[in-house]
Amino acid sequence: MHVTLAVTDTQRAEVQRLFAGTFNDIAPNAVPRTADDALYRPIVAQVRDGDTLLGAALTCRPQMAAGLAMASQLGHAVGDLDAVSELDLMAVSPAARRRGVGTDLVRYLERSLRHRGTKVWFGNATADLEVTGLREFYGRHGFTVLQHGEPLPPFFGREWTPPGAEQPAFFFYKRLKPVRR
Image 1 (cartoon, rainbow, N blue to C red):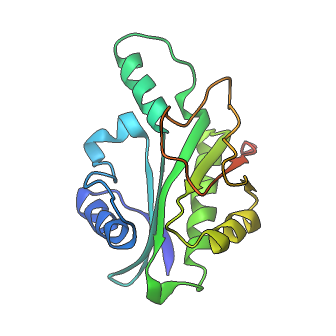
Image 2 (image 1 turned 135 degrees about the horizontal axis):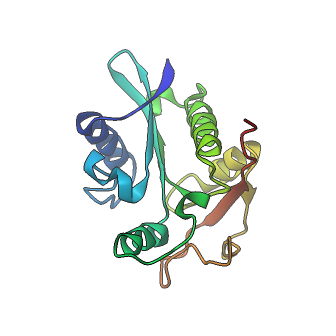
């Protein structure tokens, strides 16, 4: 059992099915196709036991940064779009919970983001999830876990949650230290 990247559309479709089976109202295209990697810069990590997908996580440019990436393709200067990444989705199959799969995914993604040069990693948990357990999980992994209703602080002079977005149960974030080369 180890973490690998989902680098093919077939692997990503399986990750999408895990997310759809875990969360309510997941968009059918929540996991970006490989053709869209330049826009979203996703890291789609997966943990398998043989052919069985035990868990997966997706971190990528926040929605606002993806929009800015589109603007940069039109010739607008937008700065460092990869300074911030959003942990968009993470799921562990019920049979694999409490076996370190989530911890392995978080560590793998953090290491990958640090190598990429990402400076802040954030996410949120919605009220329909196991909020108390998730607060403890993210806190144990070094994230600052905000109180209900407390917004994310601006990072690099920008707000990273879309205006009018539904308020989650809580936000969490972590400032990442760069990898020494």
